[in-house]
Length: 443
Image (cartoon, rainbow, N blue to C red):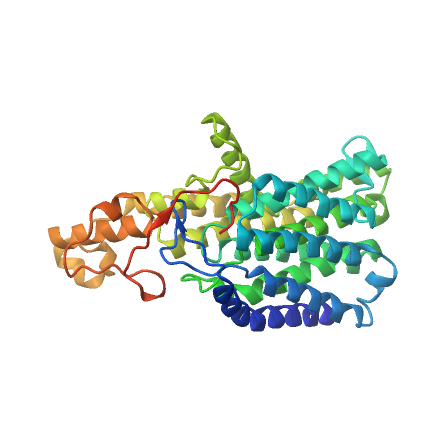
């Protein structure tokens, strides 16, 4: 555990220290696109944050290769090298997109090629644990297609959710933390060496996200861009592929009896990690809803819009920071709920706890709908947001909300004189907007 924590800290430190110089480089290089209609931020903000995250990944792998216990993941498996090869390719494509905004189909092809590079070096799904059947060995073509599909889905799910400051990096960090605890339990508690690469990947991924988050929290000073969102999506998918498709469930010896019985009782963990619908359940749901919504309207599935889950949270009245925290809450509830269920699936307390926390999450989600009206005599004892406003103050507040949520009417109906609206980095000027480009979900 000390070696994993050391790797995590070094990855986070390198990412954090490099993000500042990368921000200056992005400004000089002109990687500061105009404000688009679907964007939430109101100032041009540099991208290319994925450069710092990639070098943090390289530093983490380099340190792990020289540690006593973690170096075995490099000597007994080619998966770390496969991850680095695929990550370098997807990172280069993301950097080009952050600067030149390449076509969505080109990015999709690059994602498939990056996944294919990892498959060629051994990072692939070899078998699937299926209930009532046991381990089902996959042919080379079946394993390749399933691996490529999983990588592409995960990359685009993370890319689509990258719409608010600190949202994608925080959610992926939460998912990586839950994944790390599960993989570490398989590797350390049961002595399964095949789980060591997945444990290392999740530790490094946490370090990348934690190192970048201080620069990316609202108001963000830099965005990770596609170079960062696609990179962390690929690392997350690589860990899921490593532990799901290459660790034999029967080798865990968790349950007495046949291999079918072992698979049947471990499937609540293995199948979610395979898809992966628990570690990135919220981004995956956002991805599916976006595809259905755009296809229903007759648009391309890659056409950008303002219908994502985080946009809906802003529309119902949540602030930027509270919308991000709500998304964090649901990601943690789903990810750690699945982790707790994998440890003791027979415990009713775990199910009741998840249900109770889900109820709390729904209350927080609908909180703007139930803002109480405070009596006049009690206004001095409550926060300002619960006090009644005068007509002029109400007009100013509504305009501020419109600007914060990115509504088009804010530009056409300016606020009254003297009612300056505070936004990111202290600016009060609303910049011109460009037409939404077809292709990315990441900022």
